[in-house]
Amino acid sequence: MTKWRAAGPDDSAWRCPPGMSKADRATEQDRAAGGRKNRAVSVGTQTILVSVALRRKRDGRRVYAYLRWSDRGRTAERYLGEVNRTTRAGNLAQAWGLAATQSSEGRSPLSAVGSVEMPSASWASSTAVRAVMQGNKGRDTRPELAVRSSAHAVGLRYRVGVSPLPGVRRTADMVFPRVKVAVFVDGCFWHGCPEHHRPARRNAEFWAAKIGGNVARDADTDARLQQAGWTVVRIWEHESPTTAVSRISAAVRGSAVS
Ligand SMILES: [Zn+2]
Image 1 (cartoon, rainbow, N blue to C red):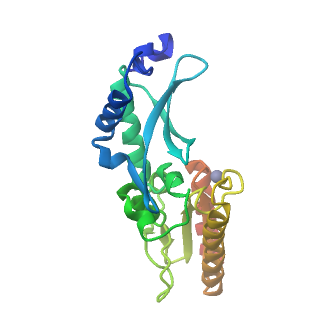
Image 2 (spheres, rainbow, N blue to C red):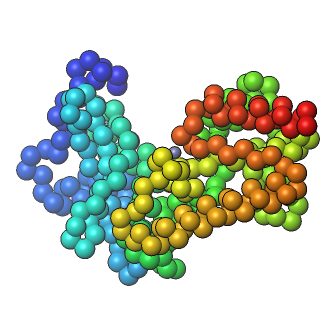
Image 3 (tube, rainbow, N blue to C red):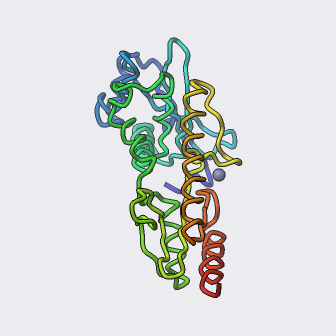
């Protein structure tokens, strides 16, 4: 698998074999996704079939995977990640694995497919899209786990996923009840990170309202907690766990002395 670092992948690891029919391509994609149903995203009354596209990077040593779909005749794509299997079939399957993982972590590019229309009951009818919507407020995302294990490694002890304020249904990712410190690990997309959140081109109004709502809610949570004597630490998912942990430690120590 890591041989590529030296030689780069063969064409057969990413390129579509010449002369493949449209039907063959569809079958290949269905197989990689574990069935056609996993490629289908309902958008309004329409069903969009999502495929994976593989491309070799300009340096010739890496293969990148993209989700691709057609929206009213226009091709849209969303970056998935790097793949590193030796066959095209292996890489397509690995790419679908990435999409599934990202769905469960609430940051799936599949959510972009759904954003072509305003949300409705049927909008979230695809399992993948629903997972993305639910994953928004989900627990145990990868950045969160990284921060938690780093914090644990330096001896910080905390509670996980509890509401610091009774009666307020807002859970912090890490809570230090004795010193009243609440830590939130915020996803760059969903919480409008100034560095990484890019406004959606399609359905800009819907997404602006959605993300704006999250940002306002975060600010309101912070205000309520501060009023009740809590210190709030907000970590961006892009921050290194080391930086995050030093900020958490400072807050915990600071609150302990005051
Ligand atoms: Zn960010």
